[in-house]
Amino acid sequence: MSAKIIDGKAFAATVREKVAGHVSRLREVHNIVPGLAVVLVGDDPASEVYVRNKGKQTLEVGMNSYEHKLPEDTPEADLLALVARLNADPAVHGILVQLPLPGHIDEEQVLNAIEPAKDVDGFHILNVGLLATGQKAMVPCTPLGCLMMLRAHHGNLSGLNAVVVGRSNIVGKPMAQLLLRDSCTVTIAHSRTKDLAAVCRGADILVAAVGRAQMIPGDWVKPGATVIDVGINRIPAPEKGEGKSRLVGDVDFDSAVQVAGAITPVPGGVGPMTIACLLANTITACCRANDLPEPSGLTA
Image (cartoon, rainbow, N blue to C red; front, side, top):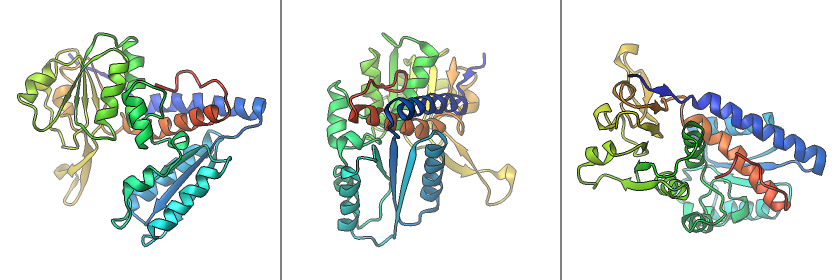
């Protein structure tokens, strides 16, 4: 048995195509152009690449992109002042402050300074609470992308046993909330879970989001289960020469692919969906700000 590979790149391309269609209609029918503002503090190379890709894809779907790059030593007060200006700017519908921030800046204070309706990352405490209580919220991009792929593969998720390995505020907890909203029976597992292998083997849907390379082997996977691997870990690649590395997930793909019914690869699985869902969230925020119907198929 070999699992179906869930192609995140192809799925993300479909999401971006839908977003572009909504952007075009907003422009032509309502004379509105959604705008996404991204703020980067410092010069972390990985963050710079990520922000550049966000800006590129934002423009490709027809949105306005506003990039703000600040020096590493930017005072927290200056960053908060920028966020306040973006909150007040009607041309900006989504605001994202790239993490991590330099150590002298309080991340929670900055994230909670973003207007909740423009919080396209879904990290504001108000959006966290709304999601937890089943109300309309801005949903974190990575869990939203996972949910979209699961719905596309399964159709109806009702009644399925879902295990989320990882309890982070960014992925694990919101992923569990989304699965609950789709009527799954949900278990959140973590490093203190007793007999983690047995818990994983009971999952019809297994979401791995712990940040530990290849932690979950194939014999922890229930035959026929759907495996969503959120992890992105860099490990040495001896076959490529000294100093070289490769990306792997939290699941041992080579063994799990022989057991699962469907699985996301790393890279090329969940990763591409994160930016696609950021664009989807920006469209949602724009529609809500203008009292227009939310785009179908792009929300939770």
